[in-house]
Image (cartoon, rainbow, N blue to C red; front, side, top):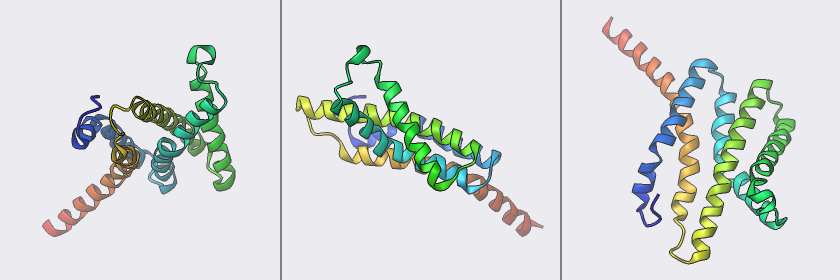
Length: 170
């Protein structure tokens, strides 16, 4: 993606990714309509991109492990940190086995995206080409979590609309 692109262009480029999370929310609504799983997914991806990913990047650079094993140590360290965070949160909220597995997958994926995003932001700032788009840094993770929630809520909205129209027309 061009670093000189406008905010609306950058947000438009993320529509396939946001569409994936919308469909994931819809699938969760069909598969498991309980509220805990969708909250786990939407909050997990948002907080993983915003908090866990940049924290793992900072941890790697603080310990000077970013170039160890040719840079291939980044993924295992990022995944280990994400799973550790999920296990700590599981100790507090007591997820079911399914919710724990989904949380691990979502937070590891979000942490990897957040890690790469943090490194890209630091690289833009280091080379001084332009200032990072802080609005996109904040809006993208929040929009990702909200897309999952929107997909989840769309099934209920569709079913409610159908029942309303069926009641009005009969």
